[in-house]
Length: 556
Image 1 (cartoon, helix red, strand yellow):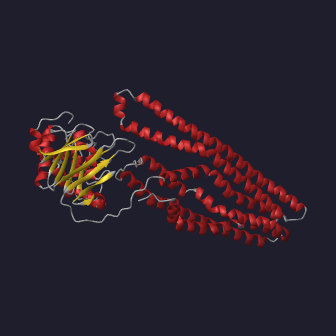
Image 2 (cartoon, one colour):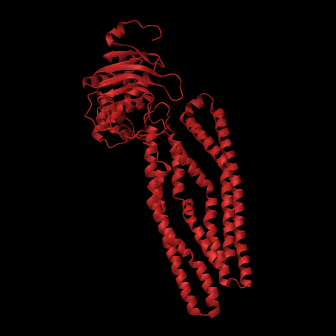
Image 3 (cartoon, helix red, strand yellow):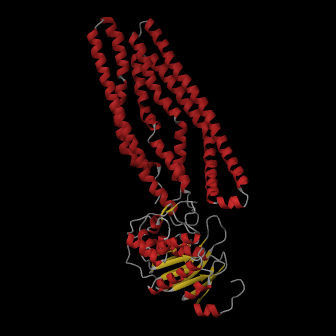
């Protein structure tokens, strides 16, 4: 999957924008009612002194304005739907990139940053700036009418349009560099602020608050300086553009009066020329006024379009897996790192077997667990489930086939039930069955709101052990044939460890394949086999009895 290109997005927006253009055509025709009315009043009614003619002309222009109001309302409604199209076409693809398996050379984008970029593009797509660009092609038409009135009026209007276009080009060049700098610094400042919020306890207990605040303020000061530089330049150029437009509209009255004195145009054409010039310059000035927003939307979409592509889904629904899990010459290096976390690992786990993965810290155990779970894709080699590569499995089917408990427990804002149900359409019976399999059902019932207890970021509504048991229940949803449990007892008390022990034993009795990444000897004893990992490689695979009776070698 690739984030939609500019051409692709415009293709999706083509139909509603064509309708906007269609209504804009008639809407701009209605704009011609004002200069025509002006000319008829001054050149016909004032000479004939005919009140009925005046009334008919006034009725006609009122009808034109009523049609204008209706067309403008319909156009606005269509344009409002454009933002929904942008959201539908881009939001899912962007979120998919943030949750796609990590690959070498592709770091996951920060959801908060792409969310801001998406909002910028969406607001631009439904804003007045788009109308300015849609109305801009009408400027030459109004210009042509001015030439029909008199060549000098048309030439004056052409000069005015050229001046405003030149100012818009100058504005783009003037604000381009500071806007790009502000966007780059803003991204770093947002990331830094989010990191402070996530690790507030650490910052507080270690006395980092003042230093982190100073660093964050310095980053924001740099961002604001760049934004202010762009704003000052844009304000100056905007003021010059407004002055130019106002002066030109007054000056064309003077030019028209001069031509009328010399009997080259009528009095009505003097005022009609001023109105036409105003309509001719309005979309040009609107484009100049919205230039900052246009640049911001362009840069935001450029950042989204520049995100690395994700392969289109080609997987099919395969037969329900039995649970055979294997790795063939797996290697994986974290993005930006030079040393591989996993190197040339080959391993095979039969259905229903329990494998304990042990070794020192930074041996690559968690990385291998993530590879087994499909959270990251190998740089080389393959992971197979029942002889099929993980990439060959359809995403939802793979999610039901492998239950994963990461070392860093991640629960999402919502209720306990939502998290166990994976925010999907699992039934209450399935959710409770998963909690019971994790031996967490009674613990959840003892909470004030039970399964409806809300989990919010940083709220502390659950202890570390409770969060781990809820995450274990989530992994056990749908009773998957494969379980990958990374340090599942890290935050558990004695009762929690006993429950975990019984849970793993029960999974083995149900003939489920279990990969246990652990330092706990008690959990190792449950396993059928033990794989010792050192320096990103599998050193040996042994039966559990052999491992427990063997003296530990240095460095293991």
